[in-house]
Image 1 (cartoon, rainbow, N blue to C red):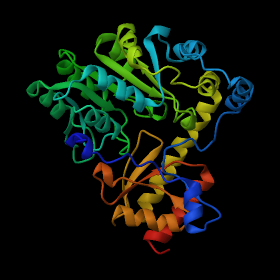
Image 2: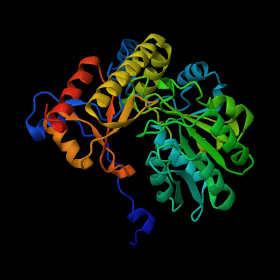
Image 3: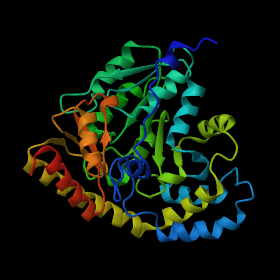
Length: 366
């Protein structure tokens, strides 16, 4: 069988290296993972209690309609329940949207340095991924993207992660308003991926839900993996008009959100203290990283997520291996076009201090 060139050219997504694998390969007794933007607090105690209560029923199929989860998240996001559809991670939702609304030979538009799942989803259904160039300071160039929308009729969807991973950069309210003056008049969908929304400190950040009220072609992606500490349960959320959700629901696989994930989600969004503690911990950790990286002379990019991108000055894979041998897993990002950079996730205060010591030892010899 012939494999289409779009599939053959795909590079598999490389997740962060597991702690267990690192211990096994290098014979280390202690390994710190600051690579995958996970919550360093672990799951909320309320989540653990909800999971314990749900365990005796795991021999039953889950609620395919996610009724209780739908009610809880509708209240949390302040949207009607029929404006929500759920995926086994946001990437499943991206898959379904591209599958439904794009045809072979058409295109999606995103930026260089954006989440690779958009490109993978597009190529898997023979859709062309287009990438606008980043600005010199690694920000999205929405003016360039608007020009591409005007000139290329193949584009059916635009994917805009805000803030972006792995750069941590964001586009402003003013920039997005100008972009939507063009995109809002097109027969396309603009997908705002707000995976890191809860960590944003910028005062001029555009509120996606407010724009969605003005532009019916805006779809919002959220996740419970980051600020709610549920990465292992894979819960992605799409906020979209009911007619869009109804269409996506036609291709959604039954029971794609398992019963434990549903129970955990209900408990997680009710635990406001957990999110507040994690947000404060993240902001404190970022500020600590900024100060330490500045002192060591590393170039870095201020982040609106729970991670920071910095330039090691050496090959990214080599930098990754140096820190790995010291027991620290960071994220090389050569696949995003950043050949000498690493992404560093915020951990607990003691983990942050230890990784800075390791970075000093690996790259500064002190």
